[in-house]
Length: 331
Ligand code: CUA
Image (cartoon, rainbow, N blue to C red; front, side, top):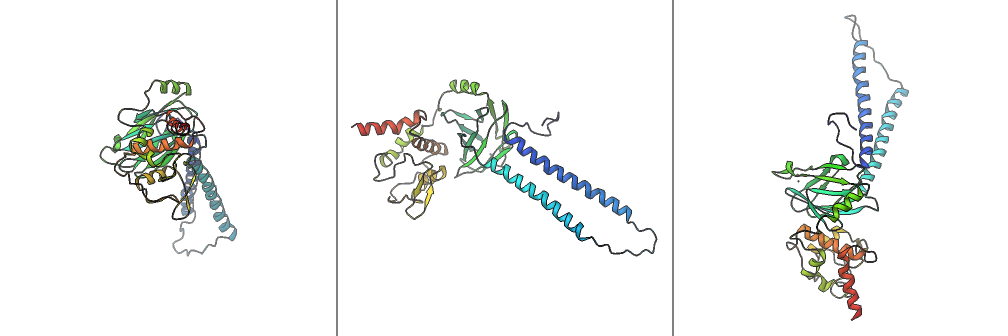
């Protein structure tokens, strides 16, 4: 929606028209009833004004039909708003199955991004047009909030857990990114941009950028450097459970019950390993709290995820466990 002046942000995602439609519906309903009530107040005040000095008022009774009408109509309108709102909410909350996963770390006062191919960026995120994109987000310090007005979506970014955000861009261009949660002195400067490129331009952009970046080890390297591989080997179930194929599966817990292995569970198991022990294992693993940055944790989680996708090709990182196992069986 363009009105010539910036009353409304650009509309740049598949969600934007849906959010706008419900917003305008609400606005229309509110405007209609505000007007109806305002006009009625003036009209009735004029019509029933006291004319002769000694006139005594008579009690008016509303009929049952009128009572029912003014109860049922607003109730119906509210139900429409609720049903419609819930539908848009569910759409906004559930990333499509084919969404590609990107990683976001917020910190005072910048946004760090990682592409599924391993490219990293700060404050600017390049994405392809027409592809649903899921952001897996966490914070290194305080609460931030990832907000792109043109996508009509916003999600808090919290320390200590992962939150999700998804969008599918519908128009190439550069869209402003804001932090929408007060996070300290430079909160107002904590912004950036989302650059939406045609798929071919995006490929070209990816090809021109170096993989990874200085100062951050890959998940495969960290897995070895932090000695995760001594206990979590795909061929060994002695000290720790094998991690291959574990992501997205159900893990049975020693305390009974089970848990879906997701990003949050992996993160917890690295930082507080004794919290939720998998059935059949001893609480032997030391905590890695304080030894890994949020970004390193993400690298490890991305690597563990890649172990779950070993049947399809998932890039160079997956070569780690696969080639490792191949050599084991060969010897
Ligand atoms: Cu980060 Cu406000």
